[in-house]
Length: 398
Ligand SMILES: Cc1ncc(COP(=O)(O)O)c(C=O)c1O
Image (cartoon, rainbow, N blue to C red):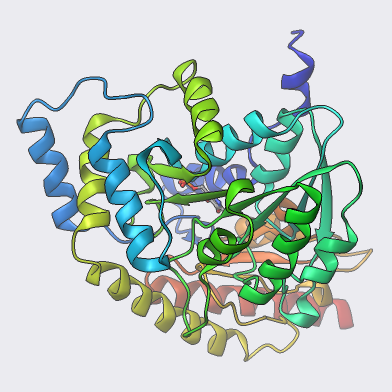
């Protein structure tokens, strides 16, 4: 079938492919330990779900303003005011169907053919695909396990050319959990201000940072580059609300207006019920966020310790998000499993554990292990992984 050239340029997100294979096996009753999940395993906190029930009971089930209710936009503004000390008017905010749509809108209204947009890899593949969908050219800065996948100002600045129109930074990053420091972002933002370049921040994991690290990136941009900054956030990961589909963008009013126009011809407003739930999430008690963070931290530390039993699985301790991203290249060979995609497939087929191959994040030689699942599942999963790779190494030595 002949589809458009645009359709030919994109495929389904590779992170979703692995999830689908694991789900198919599980539905056949196979005991798969699923460490592929890109979402919290916690239920949405009860007070948030209750707000949604109340919205339905009150008949709050119609269209709302396309960019979101004033109540929701005020709640988003208040959260960033309290957490980051930044001021945004409701005309500078749009509620979107997840952080994904916030980024999609912004990329489409800001970039086009002939523009270069810099982003970093290993990273979330959607950012690169969105740049391509806008007919712009992605320029990839590579980060490295040796220095903790740090996103450095020097590397980003070295990638700028006269055609650079934007820079997209994801911090904490998926799959590495790495951060950009406030100082590095400030250095990038100062240069971006000089050159008239946009900076888009993907802060979907901003509430999932484990150690006390200064990470007020919206604050940095507010003082350096306020009129060329787009801050994208999401309720998905912080409040265990992936299925509810709500994110947001904070940006200068003309950008938000353009995003609003685009969204008005695609998805319209976020579900009215979800909007009420997200008001409860943002304006209500934040204890649930720190409780979930504490549990993720326990899991991160425990799984890192378990994996340390096999030093050939080289793991960088992540600063945020909920993924470990070990280098598995010691277990690959030309006459055995050649790639990390082969390894991930063999892990699923033979050891019944699902991980996401590094290829999905433009990082062959690595796999992503999600610790957004119970410690018991993590224990079973790590045992299977270690048993599998050791058997592999033993065969290779024979
Ligand atoms: C780095 C990153 N950004 C953004 C998103 C978007 O999430 P959502 O659309 O659910 O807010 C994800 C989801 O996995 C992600 O990993």
